Amino acid sequence: MRILITGGAGFLGSHLCDYLLARGHEVICMDNLITGSTANIAHLAGHERFLFIKHDVTNYIFVEGHLDAVLHFASPASPIDYLEYPIQTLKVGALGTHKALGLAKDKKARFLLASTSEVYGDPLVHPQREDYWGNVNPIGPRGVYDEAKRFAEAMTMAYHRAHGVDTRIARIFNTYGPRMRLNDGRVVPNFVAQALRGEPLTVFGDGSQTRSFCYVSDLIEGIYRLLESNVTEPVNLGNPDEMSILEFAHKIIALSGSRSPIVFVQPEDARVRDDPKVRRPDITRARTLLGWQPQVSLEEGLRRTIEWFRTRI
Ligand code: UDP
Image 1: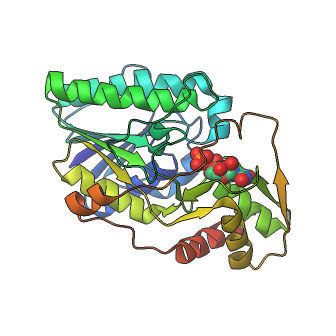
Image 2: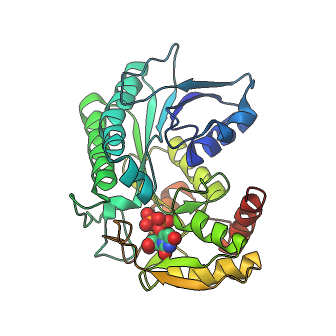
């Protein structure tokens, strides 16, 4: 297949580039590099089936030749990035999705949207199933991301229904691994960097909020299976192994052999406002329709991630 990946120089996008190239596909990677980085794809320079195009997909997307699939992964994806780029986040989810869908329609290509567990907001149903409509504050700090992705899902279904575009929607839960940005503010890079530097781990609030963490290779495998399937309904992809953030901090300290203490902080800024109190995917749909479930344990995934960060700190 000849595949376009928007956001291809980001954390997930660049792992997707690697995966698809390894399977023999041709990859066009598009990114405006506001949160992505060429460092993530530098090792692909000169690859005969790889092309990088620097472009902001909120503007008209031009790609020469045919395309079999468009994978729309472009977006800031961490709470501090939404605070720094609120309008770009809204634009790439809304205008960028429209442009990417228009391209898929024109090329008669399959379209896959990277959506998110944030469409469930601060969920009142636990664990989250795909038929739950969510609890989102449209005007809160996360609203720019949550509402953009909700709009993106609506737009994707509209192109599917009105134009017959062959679409897929992946609702991606917290994912971690090598190539996360050290300063992206998410809990994995923050805690790992703090642990490796011997600094206190900053647990927000009382640390009782929960998350479920999926290792990146598992997630990418799920994306590929979804792309290859005929499932047009949204599918949760994530690891259902749920724990409190406080427990998670202890795990990172133990696995990195650190002597860092834990501090409880109440950031004044928007990082804790509307912080979802619980999050765990119900992956029944992915299990039954895609035959997919995570394979990498949290210990193993964290070990690989800590080693990767160790060489960069
Ligand atoms: N968190 C934390 N300390 C940090 C960064 C994050 O306690 O230094 C918490 C945050 O409040 C949230 C969880 O970790 O409850 C996951 O945060 P992240 O930003 O990774 O992603 P989210 O799941 O909130 O989108």
